[in-house]
Image (tube, rainbow, N blue to C red):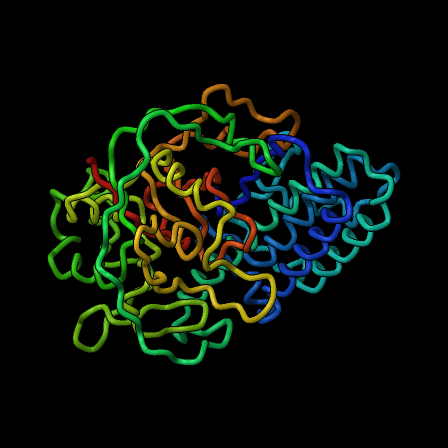
Length: 437
């Protein structure tokens, strides 16, 4: 979250990025994070809206702690920590790094201030620049890992801010809204034959990947079909109108218990109009009318599975999804761009063309799969503290694929494995249907 909040992974195969490109990437990634929090006050950046979310200030600090700890402290002789008390505050879950602040208490950190954290970032960035010519290969590998880690936190930062601002009765916008456009019309859903037979999945070894993306291995895919686009808001409104949230037979047992216990009636951030119908949703640009043609988002695995049951379909496996998306790599779609205004809202799928495969596989919304997040055959975690990334989270979670409108451009690929617990939905999570042939 991508990926479990704060979850990283290790470079899976050399070669990494060439040295000048890696340093340029480091500069760009670090600057983008600061740009994302520019509209926030110190109070905005300090509050924690739920235990699953972290304050924006904490994201800024944790990613800085990563670089100072694993690159500078461990590989630059004589580096002085900016403040020896802060690692306790901003370590996330690394047991090898010692004691740390309990996660639900992150919103209690009124000190250090946002300005102090940004000053710390500048200190660490300058130290990396000075050390750059002398960094050993291992340190540069960790610097590359840290850049991808920080991109994960950029998406988490945005989704956590969205959840925080949704709790405010004023429903404040973080960024200005795009010029108003009339909603488009979604094309009827089409079914496209998926790839069957033996196929290799997992990272192919070219460039960076997180450790959980490998090893690459063969799987047997049975005949199936995939929807050519994600499920839309309009289709979800039909599900609601047909009693989808009131029909126990559509739901997994744990999902039905979750619906009942939490009075779930619609995707997160949907709001009722004066007529009692869900007509408005809240986003980073404030409240607006629900666009029936845009992909539905902020739905849990439980909701995705129930909708698939209602539609007479199922969710794809991660292997089915990846086999279809591999033909589309490098990933192209509606992502968080490096430059220009920030407008993270899912968009209408592009028009289909004759003979075209599935659309909108990348960007807009993370797509739930029915696959449990488990290790691939032969998986081994990285050595050292950074080995506490993904392997220890391989229990009770489901895989999502494709990236979202809040994922930094260039971060996603077909082999990327995001993972969340089945009840979680504050991320930009959506649904693509599958069915057996």
